[in-house]
Structures are given as C-alpha cells and as structure tokens.
Amino acid sequence: MRKIGLVIGLLIMVSQGLSASSASAATPVEIQKGFEAAARDGASGFSGFSAQRGELFFKARHGNDWSCDTCHTANPLTLGRHVKTGKEIAPLAPLANPQRFTDAAKVDKWFKRNCNDVLNRPCTAREKGDVLEYLISLKQ
Amino acid sequence: MNNASKRMMFDATVWTASVLMTLVLVAHEAMAESKTFAAANPKWTAECGGCHIGYPPQLLPAPAWRRIMSGLDKHFGTDASLDAGTAAEIGVFLEQNAASGKRARAGGDTVRITDTAWFRREHDEVPAATWKHAGVKTAANCTACHTTAERGDFSERNIRIPR
Image 1 (cartoon, helix red, strand yellow):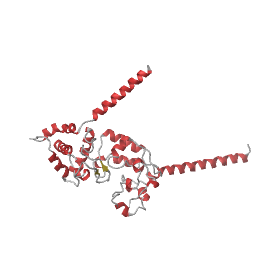
Image 2 (cartoon, helix red, strand yellow):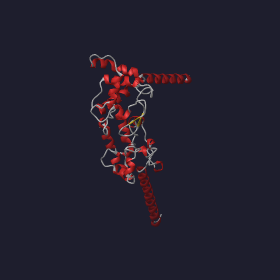
Image 3 (cartoon, chains in turn purple, blue):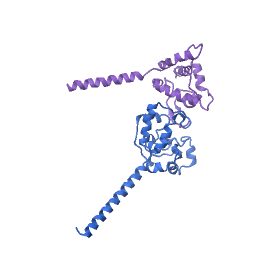
Image 4 (tube, chains in turn brown, red):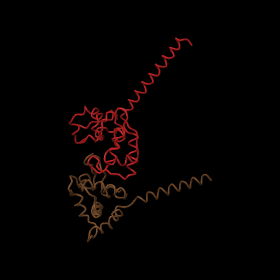
C-alpha cells in the first residue's frame, strides 16, 4: 500500500515537473508571434517583420552611447561581452545558443532593461519582432 | 572552604572567562575578515550573476544593499530592474547575509564595493598598471585576479595577477 502511494506521489511530481517546464518553454518563432498583434496595431501598413530592419536597428545607436551590438557584438553568433563589467555574454542568435528566446518572461525582462539602456524608452513590438527576425535569420 | 581556596576558585573562574572571551573575540574578528563566503541563493546567482559575478552579500552592510535593491532601474549606469517578487527575495538574502563587524564599520555609506575603505586597504598594493590591464579593465572585475571569486573564494592563495 505504501509502495503504491510512493509511486503515485512520484508520478504526480514527474507530471508537475513536465507541465511546469512545458509551460515556460517556447520557440523563438512563438515568442516572435507574441509581438505580431501589437506590431499590427502599432504601425499602419505592417506587412511582417524584417530581418534587414532588425539588423539596422541592432547595429545603430539610438541617441545613447550603446547599441545592441556594443555588448552582443556585430556577429550575434559569437560570444558577447558586457561593456561595463567585462563579463562574457552567451551568443544571442538561437542557432548558436538554443536557449535564447525560449522563455517569454526572460525575453521581456531583457528587452525592458536593454531598450531602456540603448534607447531611453521601451522598444516597440515591431522593433522587437524585427530584431528577432534578424537573429533567427543568422546562419553560420 | 577557607578564604584562600575561595580566592583561588574565583581567580581561576575569572581567568577562564577572560581566556574564553578573548577566544570568542579573536574568532569573531577572524570571521569578520574571512575571505571565503559561502551564502548562496539561486535567484541571487541567476540575477546578480547575470551581468557580473554575484558579489557576496558580506561585502556591504544591509543599508547599502537596501539602497541598491531600491534603485535597480538605475544600477551603476544600466537598467537592471527585476520583478517585485524576485527583487524582494534577493533583498532579504542580501540583508540577512550582509557585512557585519569590521567590514561593515569600514564600509562608509557607499554602495560601491570598490569605494569602501576596506576594499581600498586590501588593494593598496595593486599597482595602477594592473588596474588598466586589458584583462582587468575595471575594479569590479573580481575574477580577473581572484580566480575563484565566482564561488565566493577570495583567499590569497587563489590570486593570479595578470601581467
């Protein structure tokens, strides 16, 4: 009887673990989809995200000293480095780092911080979607 | 018991007590000066350790950590804001393990670890050229010389100064 209880308990723990991990795991394309509706609302004539626009945005300065590539480098398939602390930053392109853009909360946290640092304002949904389009497009 | 043996007992007690007190004080100061820090919290490691090493809570007194945690959106020139729940948990961890003893007394009211009096004293033999070395760049880059800083170990034997 105790054994059965143990097995049931284990099964519950495993299933909870599985559902917890599947709830937070997403693909970069799914994360990008999350920006689409807002991008449509925000810009008239929106016809999809653009890797080219994303790359320009990623490599341009927007009024501050830093651009995205200051820390993430002009080749996001490679290791970056935090411009102030010198700490290594794992590659941003999903091809080089499969963990990137798989956790919506983490994506939100970093866009909020980094857009504030680079642009002094939140990024628009289109800007975020474009950057993702660019990063997803990168092949070795 | 006669007066002489009473006196002897009293002397022995006072003597033992003072030896014990001294030991406690010495141990306390040694602990306050410890260069290996064990406290860890997974959220602290993940969040604070995301951009720099997780600086051990023992390096700043509680009021300094409180000020840091209440201004994360302007954290030494970058936005390091956190959701309220995570910030609260990390704040409690930092304050519970904050500097006490010598390091707290020699901290002053700065929130910048490298500006504290104890940090300056500990590093007063480091030549200016070392701070400017390409592998160091900033005094905040502990691991440049303290090779085991990431696991809280700042002991002398693990220092390798880049040349």
